[in-house]
Length: 422
Image 1 (tube, rainbow, N blue to C red):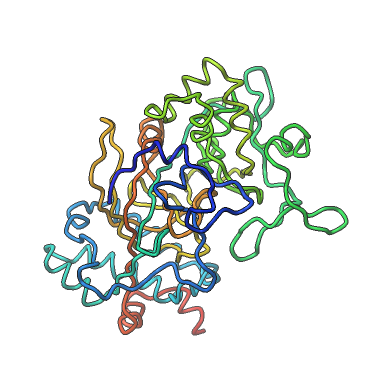
Image 2 (image 1 turned 90 degrees about the horizontal axis):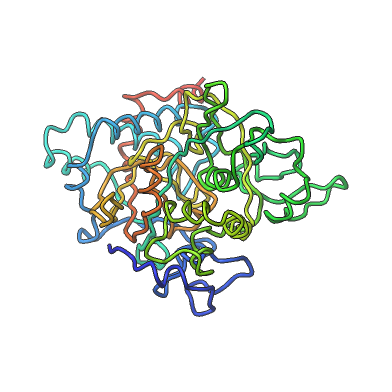
């Protein structure tokens, strides 16, 4: 585990020599560095997880135990509540983990946290009852790039008016996504044919989304931040709060704004982050707007009840420093993980970060086993940390052993299992 030098991360380009080669899609420059392509796709038929049999590969459970808190218990509870919804069965099996095992693993882990009087008891019971899996990472050796995200708050208006001229759009009726995974497939034309969506520049210049505006923000940078994070709390002009969540995206590739600005010599490498981008915006907004257009991906939104804000992709609130976002086409939803990396701090230097967390979200830029996003909270302080988070590490999943699943689900009955027995 080590903090990465941002210079090669930001100037690297898509070269045939990088792992996985170079596709025709744009490669996020910060995804390719030090000879590693963090967004290298999982080979067809391969598993993103590998069960650990060598004791020397086991993670540092002690540090994760020492960092436990009530928020970890709360995050476990959110996952269990999600598993208890009948609709969640459709997402399993995943990586050979079925719904019963996935649910029982979170229930058993939560009870293990609650009932263990000390670390040694916790450790012994954990290894007795759980199998530990490690992500294969970007290089088949477990290397994962951990970035950060947060939930922003902005001022907004229901209607276009002076000072509020930049729209966020609802999901268009011609957006086609996979019924199971939710992955975008393209745009359905009136004749029934399926075509790729236009890029960001063409969408915003053509007016094809006119009439589907959900809210209006003050500037393009604020709108872009909401696009990248996938949700936001909006302060309306009448003093009320409005909550927006992710409703889909186009099938175009994602390119990061920060990397584009550095490549164009507009932001110094050692100052890269939202504060520097905001300073550039104040000086030269048109320059930042032009760089934003390099990200072809476009996100759509829907209003939802603030009781579940900030909602992850599973539909319930994510928890700061306890929820992660991964690629849900290759990782099981809702499970317990152990993240071992370094985390950004307000002083600038990284600190060790070894935490039990829950896999409760996804993101447009988080694809492949070599990527993971740490949810870092709400507001401007979380924004600073999220902008600085960029470290390698390892990602582990905990699943209850097969012979323990039936007992746990019997002791902590699942409404889904009960419904299946009726």
